[in-house]
Image (cartoon, rainbow, N blue to C red; front, side, top):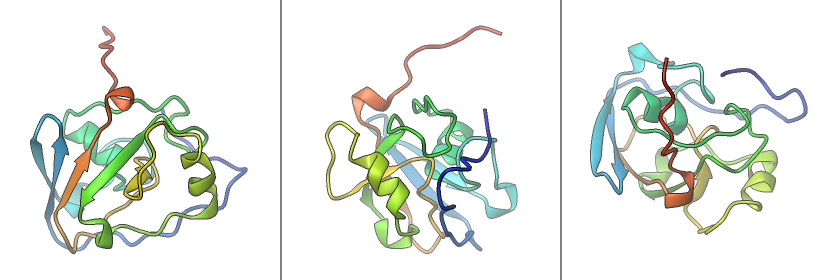
Length: 135
């Protein structure tokens, strides 16, 4: 799924210029992000945590298709928040609907790291997509 939400202001972000890594918790799975391969998928903003998670084989629920129209891709950036784009008002409004909100909470579809730091990202239990669909 992919697309653009025409009802929100598009997030501003800087694409990374060098490789960096993201460790996804609770699985402790580390993935090296290669800026040359962004976007990995067609989910969320190019280079977003949601986009990268799917490249790493880490499934995060995203009922709206990654267009900032729900809060199901809620993640918690435990380390490396300084390298992420600032949340805009639309993302903050959607985050207000998320369960277990913390000061480090972001929507995976809107949070785009710029590659200046490695990240550690926790995927809350309610955001993990446990359903595997067949082809």
